[in-house]
Amino acid sequence: MRCSPSEGMVRVGRILALSLALAAGCTRNGSQGGTPLMSPARCAITETSRTPLVVDGNREMYIEPTVVLPSGNRILLAGRPNYLFSPHRSPASPGITQDSVFGAVLDAQGRASLVPAPIDPALVAHTRAIAMDGGGWAMVFGELNRPWEPPRPDTTVRLWYGEFDGTAWGTLEPLPHIPNGVVNPQLGSELLRHGDTLLLAMPIGFDSLKSQGIALFERVGGRWTAEHIDVRAAYTQLIHSDSLGLLIAVVQPDRAFRQDLNSLILYGRRPRWSKLRSLVRGGSYPVHDPRVTMSARGVVLSWSIDDLTVTPVARRVRTMAITETGGGVIELDSDIDHFTPVTGFARFPLWITQHRTVAGTREIRYLADSIGGAAVLGTSVNPFTGPMAATATGASDILVSGPLFQADSARPRLVSLLIRARVECRRSAP
Image 1 (tube, rainbow, N blue to C red):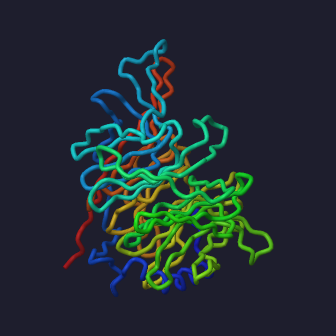
Image 2 (cartoon, one colour):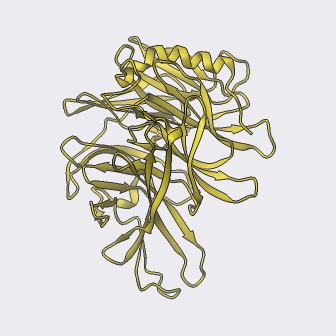
Image 3 (cartoon, rainbow, N blue to C red):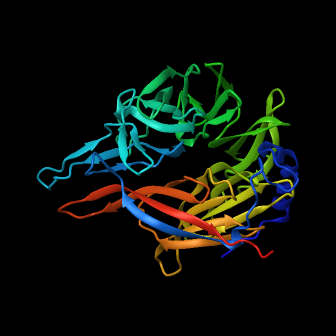
């Protein structure tokens, strides 16, 4: 079932477009930095390969897909838990090493090398990364109080900033601590770079793990500062606007309504932090996991919702493209397990969902926003058994990483499956 956006949602999108289109440096035709706009309706996606992640020549590996990010001709895979498997394992000798590294780097030929951890790897969690101009990656990651043991909740005791050049760690420094605060980077924003400034926001609790505010971290001139914002938040994402400055998209109950769950609300610093407007009402469709991506069409917000009006509850994914011409809320997929935007894909906003079909099967869908509606650019059998992440690796190529689990009692297998795909578009008639 496709849910049409309400007139209120459309109006909010148009109002927001006028103030945020500048965040992407849009020209009059809506393109950014000279990147030509392409209609997704003329495009299709074809998978070119599916391969397991292998290191040291013959050791299969799983890395939780927290970070999948290119820098130059290399791609960083980082996350925890991670598992290294011996090629000679057996039920008597499983040969599994857990949480022994930070991640892995794929070179231009697809060969993987391990990334050592700058602290105890069993305590690393919730990495956020951004590619550095000179190559390599700048990262912020959490240090847990003790190794992860589900279902016990993680407690982050400190945050670290580090720079990895693809071979070795360079800068490594702790972020400032907000007194008596316990941060939750898992529900926080991605790293945002504006000029020479790095920014990161996340929920923070005091004297408990329950969110009671937002921690905003800012690095200028090699020095970090921390600010506590007295705004309740379940999730946070950062956006920068040339006219409005720094903005935070926050998921929280909207106080304009007597009863509400997980609305998406925009806050700005003017100079004190204050609510600018409600973007999406939660209500019977509470918002989860908001994401911010950039493309030739500008700033794009996407999120999942739980549709509480149907039984069983359906999870759907929706998006709002922020452009000069305005835009409303679009439903990309009506029944999903997981979704991810394809980061760094410049032609148009692109997503991948793990879709549940009416027949009960599971498939991967490659989706785009095509002039106010969802366009399916390709589908394939879904091999993943958990969340995935995806990135562009060139103008037309993408890489998807996710877990492949095979419950064989003699030889159980958990590996990162790497799917490579290509976007091919037909030119319009002259």
